[in-house]
Image (cartoon, rainbow, N blue to C red; front, side):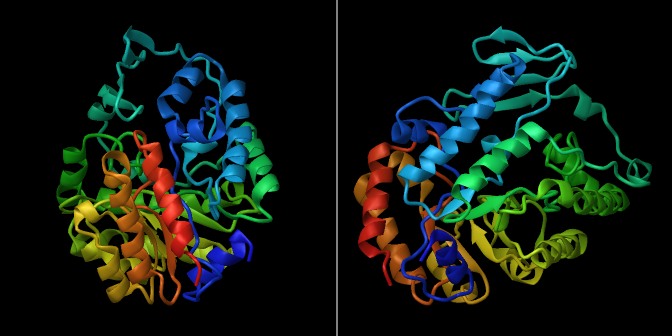
Length: 387
């Protein structure tokens, strides 16, 4: 079987030749060990600083070449181009770049403050006075959304990687976007702004949340024609729905505000012949029946430290929702090779039978993953993968 055939067989709840192997993402520090040189792929802070400095072409070339090199060296079945930290090149701008305050802090002309983490290598906006001042009303979401203009430099990266790998590998690519849970804030619909303020809006401004959701649905449907690559097999949506202790909003509230809009988006993807994979960290047990109703084909990022046990979910939902995970990211980062191997063995015992299972980390091969642990995961996988 090719990787594409293997994944499609698993998603039909049938047994392929072996369990598919895939990751939501492999971060730059592990990629560099595998390909033997520096990369911008999943090096989010380094990429953003390069964009501020106008080095767009340098980043684009790394994204294009290093994707192919990584997947030619790793025996993974899915190439995930859904996360924009692996392919998106923002258009150059005349804006003054943020000024550097210290080694890990920048401030832009709008007063936004960005902080780089030496642990995760992320660059996070820790202060956003623009978002803090914005008050939304229903009027903000009247009328038709503007059309999306294709970013040709970004498209060239997608086109090149899919041309190289798409005949063999299962390709997750971009779309017009995901409804998920709509938080009113900066970057409306993408979880920006103060979380407390966004959550209060569900109680104090429900009509605004509904208007924003309807507008976002129109905007995303319109953007699909520009965003979806004809060579991709699936999309993966990655808006988280909760924390380690439960969903951001109650299951009842999720059903009231977002079930139907998410179902419509999935139905639209299916009408294009695309599978839909849902990445969502946190405790989602109370939402799993809704995952099925929405029509997600596969659930990725099954987080055991949030009480999400892949063996229990296989029993309760594994005949209606394919599962992708099994190896705790915490064990990959701070555990031992034997702990990682035991995760693989347990997942194979309970989730492998009958298909509907893809082995991978509970989130990703995250920054700080011990290389020996990752190699132990791959080694144990190959011992147990065949049906």
